[in-house]
Image (cartoon, rainbow, N blue to C red; front, side, top):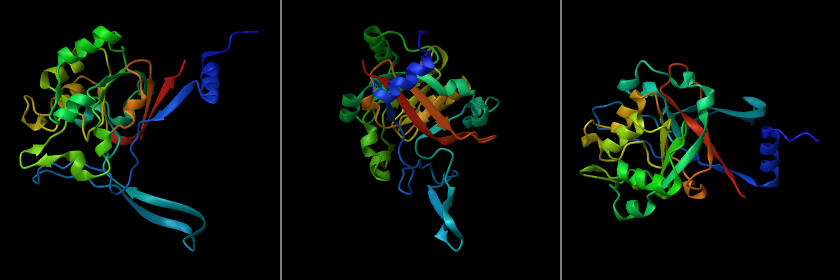
Length: 261
């Protein structure tokens, strides 16, 4: 008998449960938290459905809706052209499909973020993780687990803002530069509203994850959940943004494959 193909083995694993599909996506509803910028800037729209018909005289056998939202609402994908540093690089429709399926490294800083919501990951933290688990995956994702997905039920708790601005964990400016320019990963995934820490407006440069990653032709995934279900290494992430021509990003269904031996 011939050896089963890789794809046949994958399908078999999915059927027998040895490969688990973990949904990393937050549901899209009108209460999905959205980024709030200072009032002088343009603001994203919250998610909204407009009913077209629902088995009635507008359409007796079908139900469907129009929807309105921002490209960067809920669990979403940041394309390089989202930031001025990547303005001449790919829009979300031009991102190669092969880069939407990639291995993942999951770095857990839940305890640190619980103690300090402004906790910043430094290059030394990543180096310490690599000493224990091996190098970051070439062409893969760096996923930052902070426990922030437990706050995703409410805008106020999720943004965690006061008179000094939002307080959410993330990467330091130097770590963002290193991830973008020196590490082998294709992007950064986080549980927070955006890839940058809440205090990043005051960093140099401001919003360094966006500035460095987008300018380096890398990507962002935000508002992920269920990262606790992933091992530090070995998971494969599938990110599915809508291919919006000229778009800077898109809400995405993000799944992970986890093998149970």
